Length: 256
Image (cartoon, rainbow, N blue to C red; front, side, top):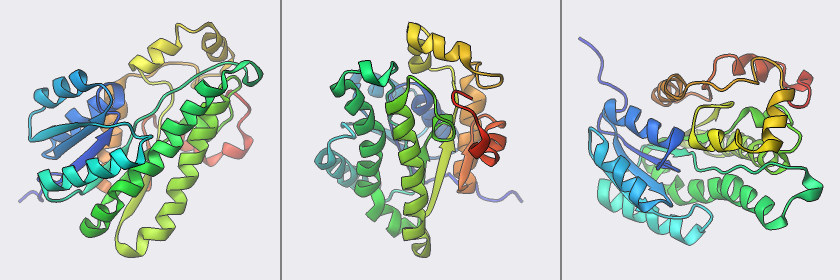
């Protein structure tokens, strides 16, 4: 007799769920029996994704940088589903360019969404995860492992969320809550396609070495994230070679 699927009947929250990794991950988790709570800024896109899922799902419009809004959303999700078993802090933005020419507001926005937004997400849903002895997956990046010129805000934010997740793990492990970090490199999403239209980021890509200089398909990356969630893994590598990059991170050159 096969064992009970680990996600069947579980409630999973995904931020940044309207597009890209978040959307595809919602589909993958739904197909494996999870109930989905989708959070993001694009109301119509969130509704589209919610309606297209195979299982039970609902969506909430909220900005992860708004701590009060995230607390309200967490309460509403619990009222709707009764429990929260998995939270994926996926919402993120990117901006490129030399730091000395960057617009302070645009630079700060990357930090606020990627780092502060992840902390707001964890703070809002942690009580529910403590109750369920659940799992929190923080989406990071190759940018957390290797510095990339012309991406100071993005690298700082992703290094920050990686460190945040590892530290949070030490605080909640004895409560039965597991914390994981998901690592991705250039993956075929709207954000990456937009970046490829930017001359600055195209220049950055041209300087990178293989295998970091190519764009990877979305579906296999999300399949690995889904498996990591099922296993409550501490580290999830959406592209397998990132595991090796983790091991030699101290030796990685800039823009590796």
